[in-house]
Length: 126
Image (cartoon, rainbow, N blue to C red; front, top):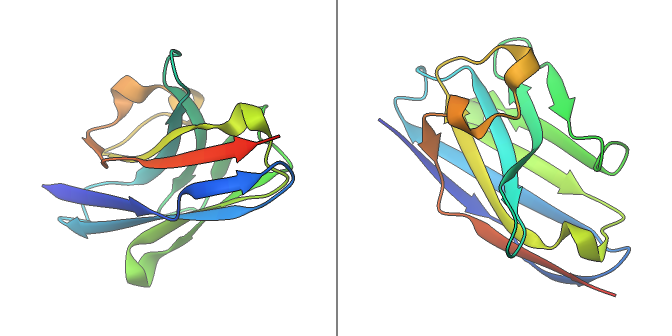
């Protein structure tokens, strides 16, 4: 099993920054990709960014390109999501998730992911 714990959420004003962390434990050799997802109030969950553990390849949703950066520290089994120039529409519960394997074209498909964290709330005020 793999356990994921998110941290770093909070409340910020528009234009501000936050850095989310996703710490993995357990059988960390099992997964090859970690993704960040978010679910705004009353809306469906959507993929935000993903990073492949081996290659370091990264993928982003169009809505966050140029503002968010995903990175990894394999030694710490931790993935980060640096969020800059935050907008009110970024307000959501943010989750990290890990997968045994996912084709890059489906990095944002939540049903491809096997393990999920409990989520961390991000609130951006205007």
